Length: 168
Image 1 (tube, rainbow, N blue to C red):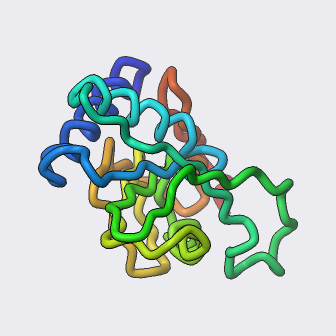
Image 2: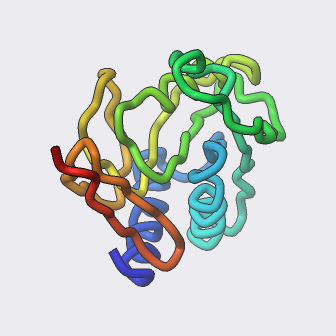
């Protein structure tokens, strides 16, 4: 995906979120630290352009302490979780850059419990690369990108690249 492809995908996802939820009232956008933050900010901005009369709260969620593999890999520096409102009875749209095994999303669902009990949680990702280990499926996808397990997917505002992993 090129930079313009990324922008088109973000615009499409924003419109799909508004359409599926019959507007943006009662929505909260939550970007997963680190890769989902800029995407969540872009989606919140695009939703504000679609429905300028409403302000959609934008939050950030660090899931590192909720991961089920925290003992298997070194813990990264903890980032800030900041959700500016009670999410009880709202529709939360979790936003991440890449959906791979589903373990980050599982951790995010657990982490949301600290901020209330949403009515509904939806998932928006820029790239779905497959290889799920948990039964998690996104509601909104920018691009389905078939990859090998060993590939690395890098997402940035100027495009998406895949680097091939080592072959054995």
